Length: 202
Image (tube, rainbow, N blue to C red; front, side):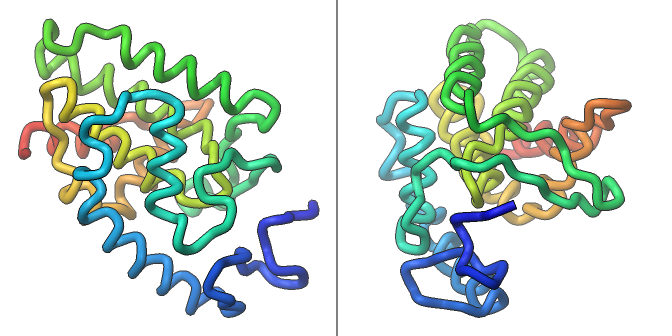
């Protein structure tokens, strides 16, 4: 399948830095996004928790790297997931990405979070965040964007989420999301566990 996001003849994403080596790009991406995530709260703490803000978060984190930062992907994606033996999840279809995102954000914003206990909050919030993540609206950077949005959302709704804790366990978070979102026999416990720890250990 043709991928307009990569440099022709390679698997390296087109980028503002002119990097053509995947290892070097991965390192540059890790370094740049780490710094961006350190001060992102100051930029977004007063923003509405909506579709436009989600796109703006992605643009803020990845805008120095990729020309398509903050834009919905235009191709369907397949990712070989290690924890699934190389099988991919079924990510959101490009024809309805915006509608899917808005539907989940509406669900998130309709919950009266201040009126329910943490025991109720953790599974409900985790489930909606996992559904938002499964849409995978961007060509790259979905986990970092969705988890950061989750942190901003939680803080605004009064149940602070320890984003540093989740960032320090980024590999675990992503693998647990994959297992949570498997259509047949999902294993939800791993993601619920780390989200519970991130909420309770703020």
